[in-house]
Each structure stands twice: as C-alpha cells, then as structure tokens.
Length: 363
Image (cartoon, rainbow, N blue to C red; front, side, top):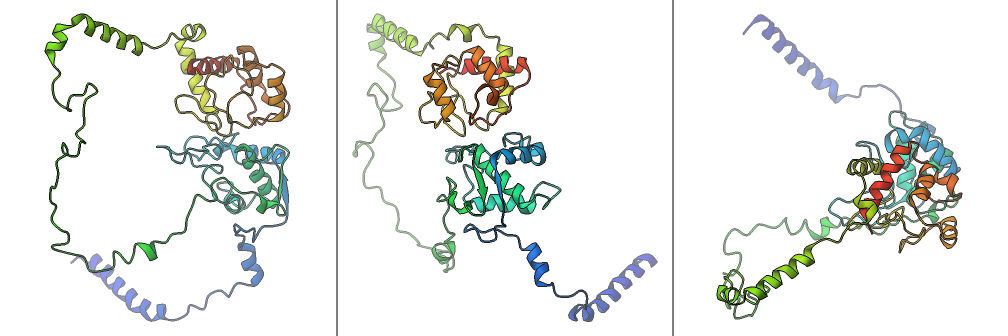
C-alpha cells in the first residue's frame, strides 16, 4: 500500500473513532424555534379554509399579476409554455388516452391552488406574492377555466364557496385494509387451484365468430358464386367504393393554401388550452371550433356563452372570415364582456393562417 493510501486509511479510521461518541451527544447548537417563528413558516391552507390569510383579489387584477409573474412559464392564458404545465382547460379529458390535468379538470381543492401559489411561486422567487395577489391569481385561474365570471372577486370570506369540478374524483387510500392483508399471508406454492376442464366447445355454445357473409371466421368464400355472378359482384364492389369516397370539400377549403393551413395549425397552439378541434373534440374552457368559419355565433351545443356573445348571436352575427379576423385581433375590443381572456393575435398573417386552418377542420 502506498504511503498516501496509508495516510488516507488512517485518517478515515481516526475520524470514525472520534465521530462515534460525538454523534451520540447533543451538539449544543442553536435553540428551539419561537412560536412566532414557527407561525411565519406555518402558512399551509387546508381544504376547509383553515390557514387562509385575510385578503381579496379580483379576476382583472389577477390577469395583470399573472402576466407579470406567471406568464413567462405558464403562458398569457395559462396554456403552458414548452414543458411548463398548462393550468386551464382539459375538462372532460381525464378518461382520454392523454388526459390534460389542470386546475379546472383535475385539482380537487381550491385551497391547494392558493397554497401552492402563496408558498412556492413564482419559480425562483417563492413567497414574494402577497396574499391579495395570490387571491387575484387564483381568481384569474378560476376564470380561465370557465368557473367564474370576469367580475368575480375571491376573498377569505367566500373562498370555501368555490367547489372545483373534480372535488369528488378522488377517494381515500384504503390499501392497508383491503390489499395489504391479502399479500401478508403465506403464499400458496402447490395445488393452489382446481385443474381446468373443458366442458363444452365454442361451437356448442353458439359463440363461434362469423364473417359478415355468415361464413365461420377464417374459412374461404365460395368462389363459384363470384364466378357465376360477376355482374352482381362488380356492382356490389362499385357500391362499396362509392360509399367509401369522401364528400367533396367546401370550395374555400379545397382552394386553401396547404402551407397556410399548416402555418395556422402552429398558430392554433396558442388556442389549444381552451379550444379543441377535430374528431372527438369537446367543449372545454371555450367552445369546440369545428365548422366555426361561416357558422352563426354562439350556437355550439352544450357551451355556456357569455351574455354579450348570446346578444351578438341574437343580432345575427356570423363568423365570416372578416368577423373572425376582427375578433381574433382584439377579442375584448370587438366584444366587450366576452369570456375570452386571449389578448389577440397581433400579426395579420397569423390571423389569416389560423382562420384557414379552422376552415379546413369542417363541421
């Protein structure tokens, strides 16, 4: 062994000998925390409202504070940026293959939202948000998820009146009572089950699968029939081909520039937190947008529109290209009181592109 290794081994041995007695004794460092010092860190908020500080904040203020302190990660409309989480939308998606878990779709208690904001946000500057700002941001997130109106104000007094949609979507962990005992007994190692016996065949039970023409699955068709009636077979094939031929696309879609549609699909990412399109699309924070181009305003079934939108619908507003362009450029300026919190698209080319994309989706 080299001299340096011997010295290292000797130092480690000496340290272990000296550390033993020392670790067994009190270090005598510091003092017990004072009650007020504990209270300064004890800022947890419980589902029943316990721990809420006095204060209040409205949606409008929350929009401003969110834009200043949260939007760099979560987007201006809580849609999420890059890998930072989306906070709005996702309602009805929890059973989907890729559920969108947000404050509105997944979180069970509003207290968790407030507590996390007040305790841990913004990232890298935790606990710099005042109680009033935390109430305002929470109110803005409720509005972004379509749970309150734009004139809503949240405070410690009305906090417990808000019930999130997924409040009943969780259940207590009962594995200690239901599962642990099952796995705590001695395992069976032999003759654990009765031997399996075949008592009937599938054909006896009349559950043998059949092809659409009545043949048992996997058997070949009667080719002599096809040879005997080629005209009938050809007619049937032609009929099936006609049914499979897609309907002609609307004129404006057929002539739309594919590159423009592709660009519009990218722009639509700014809208995906609230609006869905395509097959299986459902209403979320905002209505689904299938067939929106050329459609009468405020007519998507099952969506709760704002009063101004319903009034515009009754007045005959139709979402033509021109109307959509004006609305997307400045939603709140175009329709005062709209639920849509989006500030608007500032580039005309982005507006044209997203309208072309929406027009390609269809009804």
